[in-house]
Length: 337
Image (cartoon, rainbow, N blue to C red; front, side):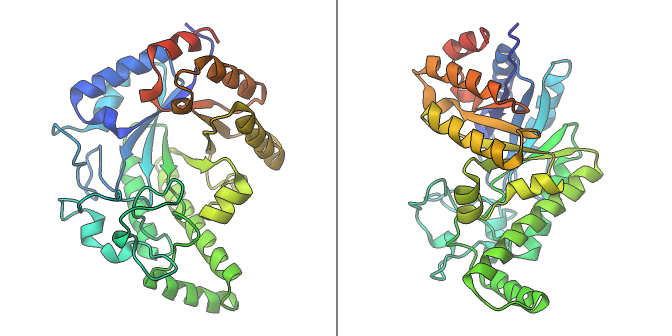
């Protein structure tokens, strides 16, 4: 078996039936991963037995995909991280969820609002990079409590960690939800600050950080770890554009690991960004580097060379996005590493 053991993200589409889940376990065995991130919350719906979220509409059978994954992985050598999308709660261009339990139907007033006062529910699409659908607004205290309750539920399962994705704002032009703005004005009074672009950015960064902290508290109370999927361009894409100060979360101990989405299509660009993160943090300790296998289909020689270059930078782990992109040719090449 290969000495190189990657981590791998497993999207919810692999969990829609018992048959697809069994095939997923076989695929995992074929690459011998050290960890699998199993997506159990996609768009505020559940691929586990939840008292908070409705079952995902994509499920074709009535079963508990997370529990079945845990049972089928018993005796295997990979660890399981339960992956939840935190603030992204639906997709653009879709009809509203069928279930009355879905947060978009129960609490549509929680959806974030753009700087023009338009709710993301009214956006038919987005031309912003990686903004796939409506988000709930972390500036609302009840939203932070809601997402912490979901993480609390997931932590009851026999998993090593809870993995957080989309724990950020969709973009800095969002966050203008009226409930959140009322909280912002309370915060200004408490902090003795005046209203400004800088103070609003700070409020939103503090709001996401509080969300991370609340989730971390409940997950760790169950003896589990916390990791976050984060942007690879720290100062611009992460902090400035998405209000996601993940290096601060890591340094302060709010999270155990950051999984950097270094999905660039060109290896030199990927290496440059990873080297910059290493410089900012002082090392890649507690940092896992996520590589976008989907961007290298038909270019597996380049991808394998990229993996080798990243290995030399000594990250905690190397994570592949996603299992569905790992074909037989790539599996063969991974075994040579």
